[in-house]
Image 1 (spheres, rainbow, N blue to C red):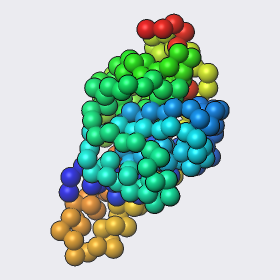
Image 2 (cartoon, rainbow, N blue to C red):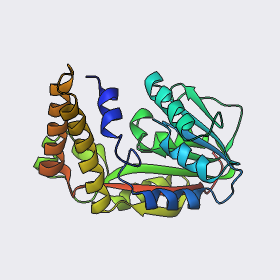
Image 3 (tube, one colour):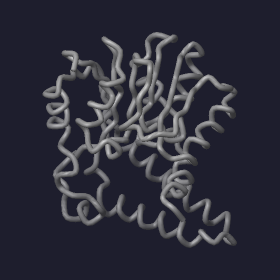
Length: 249
């Protein structure tokens, strides 16, 4: 069972592939997109959930998404069709870090995709290349709520993988960005996300006992649940920042 298949099933029961509630997603999009005719780019769009939500609420939006996984983009296109949006959202099967466009965008979105760019600041550097003057970046990234203990590190993390929240914001500001809004995911949002992640994968395995991937799905869910409950719960945080540049790059 390959990683993308696991992720697709695990995220099927949650409103977004991040520890954010429906209300938080709507509030963040309202902050980021006060104009209904804006041009929006999602770098590392996954199955396109942010784009579908944004486009559904703002029919005049001009939205595009980039992801390097063909199956994920295929799922995104199905989601757009299921939402009755026709061809209103354009998708590109490309490396988000290398994506080039003839357009500049009012808002560039990148939620939980910093690994694809090589870290927090490279993600902002990539986003800035696509940003219209005065535009905004909506960035979602993990941070340490507290110093990671041995249980957290044993669940697959390294101490320097993330900074604390204050240091994360300081680094962003030192790079020439100003936060104009932010949302720190609550423990409830994290718990809802993790129960949904492990539950969706477990449910799929229990509903498909004859499938050859059944055992691997249960193992993946159990490993993730253990890492969460016995490791990073309450230690790993998630912040979504709405940013504008102080100076042009």
